Length: 346
Image (cartoon, rainbow, N blue to C red; front, side, top):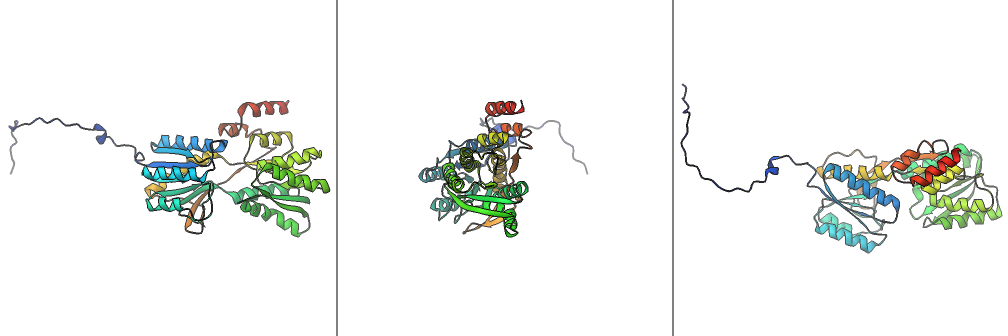
């Protein structure tokens, strides 16, 4: 049976003013509702400004809201910033904390507010943390130890390690150094803590050692600042370039020392990459997506999934080819390094 459909319908019509938000009919960027708050330790340290810019750029690309604050090494300022973020109802907190160990009451407040927590660059212990994103410190130590033992397979070593929290670098390096100590090929002349990672403390340690004994072949220095202090002491005794010295952070002065031959290597920890990866992982965490992690680390309170970025080794063999990469990540000053490059090439 078929029904005929009239060509015209008659019905009452009422006109009503409607304020229609037409954006409702347009599919918004799925990330736009996510709000991120980040607290970094210092606005005066270049790499934290680099990380901030990288996070903001990636958040902007993804269309999500982010605000980054600096604590400037003040725990009270850090707490103030975090409390402000709680009041703003952020979805996720990215934190490089001034306080790395001990019960952290402010993070309990963050957890109770239902906010996810990412520890960036340094793991926070004894507190609620959902994810750790940082550089592979064990790998950094392994790269330094491997490099030293290849350059100096037999000789007299000075081992320097930063304090506090420098144990992992040393553990990685000693995986390569210790076996040669056991066989008698390497002799560890001194094994010293460099308090607060200060270059002047590294300088004083090396100065004191070489005042008594200048028969030194290699120095394990965990970071470039300590390497700089060690090399200053060596230079005063005309020993610069004769002792293999490691480093880390790809600081401008370290790059120059590698070009000059007074420092043997450094490690580039790319803060641009760190910032970008952290934002991408924050989105995955909020959306409940799987995260491809490297390790699970128990921080004393919870098991924390950890994503670690491997450092890049820079030495005399690749320093010139890596210059553009170093400049692109804005870790070094373009004019100073390029002028030094041209000077050495001539």
